[in-house]
Image (spheres, rainbow, N blue to C red):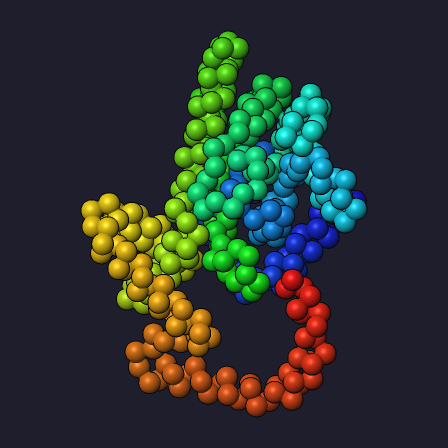
Length: 338
């Protein structure tokens, strides 16, 4: 029956993601091993949306760690149970942390069986555009599983969740699966002594943090991140599509734009601020007119023709149906947005 519950949860997650986001791009899915124990570690900037994205887009169905207070919620608890989620007991939630002994055992058993565990090592859902300091739980779970059942060959996969405007209904999201890495060296050094093991846990946590930094943008503000995305869209107009790839190239370009802006801000703050102001003004103009970048970047009349004619035909054909549908669905649509 486990496979049935997993299929149901994944189907629900995919449906919700399709409803909430206008577009979700996926990068690096080939990095996730198709078999064997895997630890997925992701940034956590958007509450319950984050696990839904990972479940919907990952080729492996992971068992998520979730704070135990969520298991008390009458609507969330059934979903967590169906997903096989594992509760975490935190002092900040008023729980006895000693109850996490069972949490670790369940994680170790899942990894020993060749399964996938997913968690957010920052330990909290936050509203910051940068990664927050990581807790040691991910490292302790991986090393503990190897010590209890090893050698397992656990692979750690960093997962970056990047949002265009995370609180905006029908915006864009990007899920980046980074390069996996093994922990064989850490396992060998952790076996030496308890004191060495504690140091290895800290070092592995730092390694996970560096890996997560490669799949996230990490700007000073959400506005900077949004403007970096806009700037990369503009730059991409002049970059050959075959050369830069699809979503992978877009994300790489966004990271390069962020890094270039940081360098410019350090060397020439006035120019950096002027550039930022121009981007913000351009974004306001697009929003005011309901346009996207591809609508204003056409360099040849044939592009406009190819874009406009099929859409005009569709508009004329579906307009009567759309008017009825809009009248019927306006209220529930707004309710979902709220």
